[in-house]
Length: 624
Image 1 (cartoon, one colour):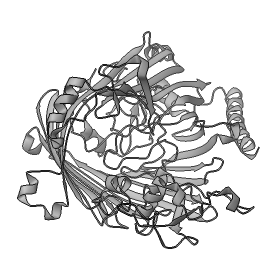
Image 2 (cartoon, one colour):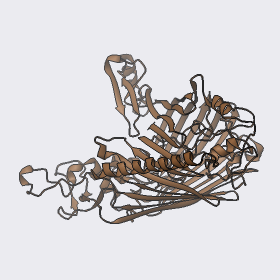
Image 3 (tube, helix red, strand yellow):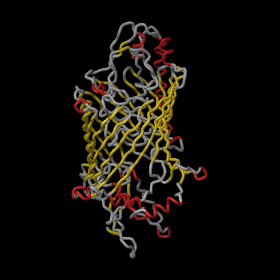
Image 4 (spheres, helix red, strand yellow):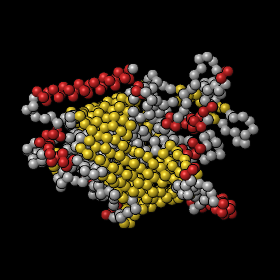
């Protein structure tokens, strides 16, 4: 009931504010409009208007602007209305080329295959200037915005990737370099499809879908048996479809004659399908703009880390920060106040009852050359949060910062067990007994936690150089990784929880099951993180580019270092070669996570640093 009352109060606030403004307009019809978009369209003299600046959005050239409250800032389906017309979207914080709220990547090539000019990302202008066309009329604007047909488009990706891996690279001899510990070949093809429909000026429907082939899964599409069709649900909401590939008898016999090291155990390709965005935009009296559906929500301004991004389903991947991330099913209400915005999000993803709906109001405003956002997040059974963001620019630097204050943490914590002995072992008789530290699980729900991050992005156009630096303080994390491997063991063996009593007869009357450890409880384990990225596109005016990346958990001194070179042979064909070194103490968060999860506390499993070499060939990629 408290949740329902809070939601009702917020909605009532929006409606009362709108009603009050509507009454003022009816009383003062002669008064000039306070809507900066309407002023830009109706003024008879060119007017300069300060607009909210997103440091990651491309700077617009001085041109006539037709304001569309629904169109994305760079919608690939909407052709330019004329040589001097562009469109803006009050719903998108940093719209990508497909209309989603995805920030552009300043480390991409300045003139990549999408045709976007990334140099304009860091223009020197402090503000976006909107210049009105004195001859434009409301009827002209309406007719230009309506789409008579459904617009389709997308991008295709084709890649063949070959990988080689070495264990313990700091002591590797030349002989072992020529004989890697692991090898792989991963061909893949994928496509992103977008559609946009606008039957009226105040109504738009948009969708974005992804289809990708996956090599080496348990089931494939080749020779698919529809009677044995299987579906696998992924963490991001997508699903994989295929069927178990039955081996051919002849191939099985041939495989037995081959050496075990060269045996081909790969399965046929399978297909993953996901709906990344599917929503409708509509409005009430051109004052309250609404969006309902599955859509990304861009609250955070961080590049590698974003603690303020509390609404999307997945966190930023620091190694691929511009990758699409799936958003939740939600209702967004946007109420512009001049050049500022008041938003209310009602997140309806994974809810059973009305009181499960998450409520997240946010107010963003422009102060000088900076944009500041203040928001809150509340959902039943989760820790409430207060969120603040700052984005600004100085010369060629885009500067950003975030801070989050929460009461309690949603993380399930671990500590050495107070009941079981410090070291417990499975029953005797096993070939290789695995020793582990028995852990108790618990939650911290009645104390404050703080997360904060800050950094900058920089770009120079001649030569085309880019740099990005960010630090992240993670208050809910651990000071070191001494218990992490034991926590992974507990995740894989929940019956080893020191507080668990499996015998119901032995459970006391006040017994409660201890909280279960989840995969998400093992992410961002430490308290201090840092990331650095450097790029040089078009080295010496050639088609060669280079990039370097460093990600570190400063709490346990584990990290990932990447160095790669790419070369574009001709349109639609390019290749890259890169080295990836994961380093740190055994069991560190970034040192060798796959080995820790696959063989936690197993002394026979190598968990030290790794060196990987990857050769990628991109074939046929492009937009359509």
